[in-house]
Length: 332
Image (tube, rainbow, N blue to C red; front, side, top):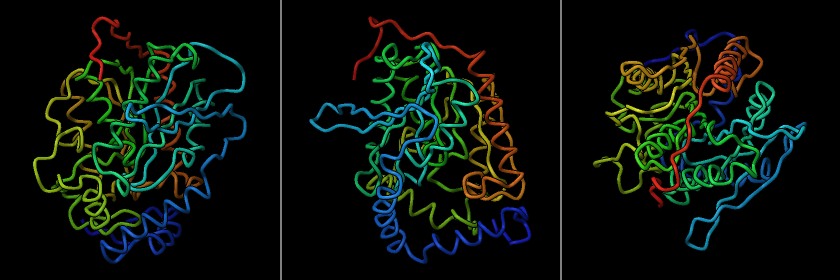
């Protein structure tokens, strides 16, 4: 999909073009090196940074092999119990990022409807390919459910969300939770999710849009899938391959019409709706990948945020999923 400058929303153009020049690489080798450099920079810039106005803390969740997952927890300052719990997975093409970088999102979610955000610092693909990130996120979800009372979470309102690769992990976690039966999710929020490694759709092929294009998408998938790339990839690794979406929770998502993930997001929404699962969905014209984060003050970004928050607020009032009894749980 050929994208021209004129196709980009006027308020998004300058920042998109500027960031594109900074982040887009000319080769796979340079892309991989930039992901390693980014890890160092992100750690320095964000790691351990709290969100003003929120109660912020850190926990460590055991992987069961002697190592642990760092987890950031965000709550409203006023002590409230029985709140929705949101597992939030950051973006970054599976290759970069830390949970602290989504601080603005945590603040908006909590300001919209009091909740507890649980954000895992999952393993990145540059350090360990699939299933490392998914294993980490799922372990933290199970931990969150098992510690709901002490976290101040209503166990019947466990939710999951994330942007980009975090959106892909959101769908993967939802599929895994459904299939294992450990945890029942009440709602999920996979924003412009990175779902399909095959890149067969119109929007994914030969896309030259700002920020994230077909080349970076391919390199990101190769890093994440490792030896699985180009082979029989499981749907937990690339949820766009999932053919059975039954018994997944209600959802909200949005996507820009210029980005590689447009068509796979549309397809996921259509698959959910076809079997009667409620989905709030919007496509934003003239928007590239991550537009709402890259240019938060643009009118289109504010509209996308308002749409997301309205849907989240509705979910906290209307969507519940009682947890399976301990007798029926499949322990992993």
